[in-house]
Length: 375
Image 1 (cartoon, one colour):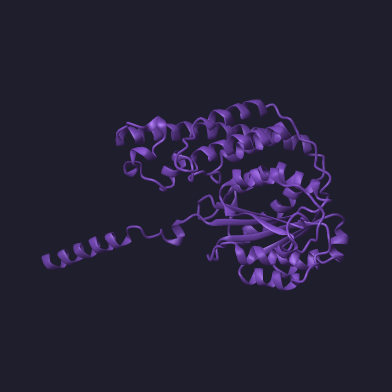
Image 2: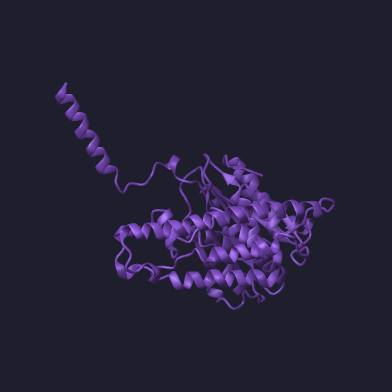
């Protein structure tokens, strides 16, 4: 009997040692939502770019209400531009700006840098590039989708969009097409056909009409709390200074548009999908990316140099606690703001905007993958 117990103990120790460093079982990992946004940046698409800048955070906030297996999903976004004359013809007038990334501030930063310039819009080629070049998840339960927006015939270019869309769906990537113009025109020029081939949604929007922003009573307090929350970020490592500066710049970019966009961004910063573990020590500790006790003195932020291991953990935990309290306040105020806006818009028809199109596709396709939404 003792020999059997000893064998069981040895087996348990062996299993524990061999599990160290191994990834969590798939069921214990948050599901991923991967979204590649392909934007036509030819000369007539200024309105589309403006919508993308102002509506990014609204899309993130929609995803913040998603759950799968009780967990908030991890969001990764990629950004491409196509139809841009300043990009060489040899590259197909397209450019991958950001690969699939959870660095949402970087996506915002690049959106604000986009400029339009007339060119050739090759939808089949840019879809093919996104399908082949990005690191798409191989897990069947993850949501993988492309949203391509533009206003020229879908069939232009040497790469047949039909082949690109079939290749996408063969890898579990749905293609949603957003035509910037009349619904029937998009129908006649192949945009719906592309979506149909890849289990996606076809939608038409007015890229040149963005509904005026709505100012709400909660806006000033939300903006103040957002700035206070910035003080809980602790820059570290080679990306620390640039990451913290990028966060501030995207706050300024949002504020330059309207108090509504500022509020949407603040709410996104309070959501689980907004994580900066590459440069913020609080997020890095929370996600297990770093262990404070293993960090060399030279790796620590100035505020933490000379602290004992116990003091390091207390310092970071205090910042995390303060941040979580601020996030709860922002989330509560944002809910109040949403009710105020909904009341203002209750007699108006839904806007045909880029964010509305992407959110509609996201909800439908996420539910098909067994995601649920709190709202």
